[in-house]
Image (tube, rainbow, N blue to C red; front, side, top):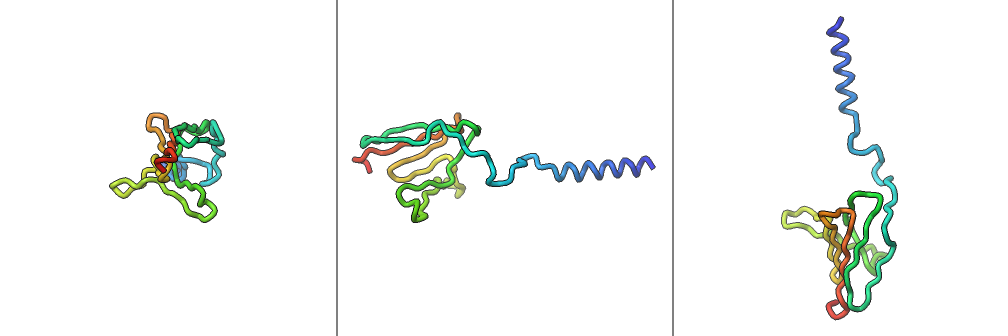
Length: 118
C-alpha cells in the first residue's frame, strides 16, 4: 500500500513539475506597455547622438524600425552576424543607427548622421 501511495505521489509531482511554466504566465503579446524616459528625439542638421531608456523592463531589443516608408510596410531589420544569427542589439538605417548597450540593456543609443554625410 505504501508503494502505491509513493507511486501516485511521484506521478503527481512529475506531472505538476512538467506543466509548470517557469518562463512567464503572461500570454505572448500581452505584456505591459513600455514606459520610456522620452517620447521623441530631435536632431539638427549636424546629426548627433541621444539615449532613450525603458523604465519598466530590464532590457529591450530591436525587432524592426522604419523611417518615412512605414506606411508602405518597408521595414529595416537588425544586423545579421557573420554566423547567420540576428543581432537584436544593433540596427542600421543608413543615415541613423541604433545600439543597445550590453552593460545597460535598458538603454538604446541612437546616432544620426549629419546632412553632409547623408
